[in-house]
Image 1 (tube, rainbow, N blue to C red):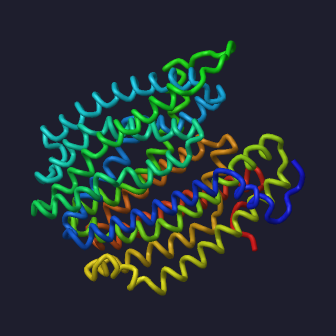
Image 2: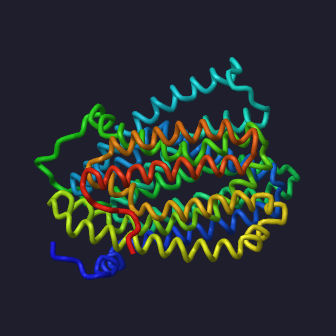
Image 3: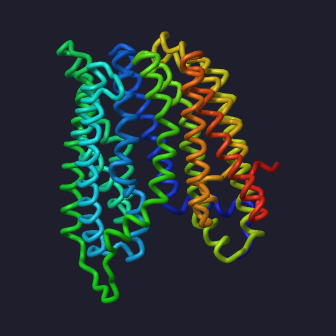
Amino acid sequence: MTNLKKWDWIITTFKSNSLQTLFLRLAGIVFIFLTTYVFTHKFSPDVVGVYDFSRSYFILFGSLCMLASDQTILYLIGRHTNTKRAIKDIYTKILFFVFIIYLLFNAIVYLFLNVNIIPVDSTTRDVVLKSNAIIIFYCIYLINTEIFRTLDRTFFSETLRNIIKYVPLIIGFFIAESNKNSLQVVDYFIYGFIFISLFSTVVLYFILKNRKEELDEDYKEDSLKGIIKYSMPIVFSTVSLYLLSSIDVFLIKYFEGNNYVAFYSVAVKVISTISVAINSISLSIATETAYNYANRNFENLKKIMKKSGQIIFYFSLFSSVFLFFFREPILCVFGKQYLASINVYTILLVGNFIMSISGNTYIYLLMTNKGMLMVKLLLLSVAINLSLNLILIPRFGIEGAAVASIVSIILWNFLGALYIYKIDKVNILFNP
């Protein structure tokens, strides 16, 4: 690979699917803000809090139930050049495995609730039981989403992930409001995954039916054991990342109640817009990072890290300044009561800006065969996050949760950057 000119890799990104993915994800963020706006104006913070709890529950335990197999699909199927035979083989094996885990998971949660190991109120119990029953459909929806990506149906995949997923919730806005039964809107979100999974499965069936069967005499089926073995490091890292974004929500609900879950979650959603763009920048250099590392071309690797680190830092700086000076008007968009989260908003904003200095820690570790190191760093971060939340939330409320979240995330990113420099002599920190 020849030396890169200053912005050549950005131009390459514009010619790939990365730009389309970024556009669709940003469109998804806008769509989420619109639904959040409607939600916060039609329903009380208590109902919004129940919804955000159920959403976090699906994200965390859905990933655990399916052992993050949606993230292994691209690799497993991609090795066989996305052939129809590979898709059918891997799809059926993953679904079988997910269904077994789903049954075990439901049995464990049902036992926990009945022996009252963790006391919960009737509303929480109801949401948990409903979510557990429907979580298999959530898993099917996620698996289908990644299958569409392997079939080069990026537009449909991202639309399904970022827009179609919220259609049942939007329908619920109007029906629940007309029935004067506010909590019914959460049911539409939960049960909506039945519709989304069936809809995506039907679309996938017809796409595969019309797809030409490629001959591959060297094709060798992946065993269920092999799929599980490959998935495990990804499971630990993925579930750890979801834990980092969910522990605070669960503990805020336990210590403070649904209202404060709503206040906290709105602040998180606003700040997450920065992360979406940063993740897209990181993904755009993933293949180049892997290629240069595999060929031991550390000079190019250093240039890529420096340039992407600069873009991440300056984008974060510009975005953070804008979001800081307009923090009150932005939060008031969702209702004046959401100004209760202005301190959380500020803490998360400052923390995310500090984290931007660490550059591409996650992608670098993932693309340079350092997955187990990342797992260790993330597990350490989860332990610190949980400990800090248990100490800080009872004393400082949602502000304590924000501090715990930022401290743990900054810690693992900078420890990862330090390790990278020590082993590979590559500085991924911002370097002007």
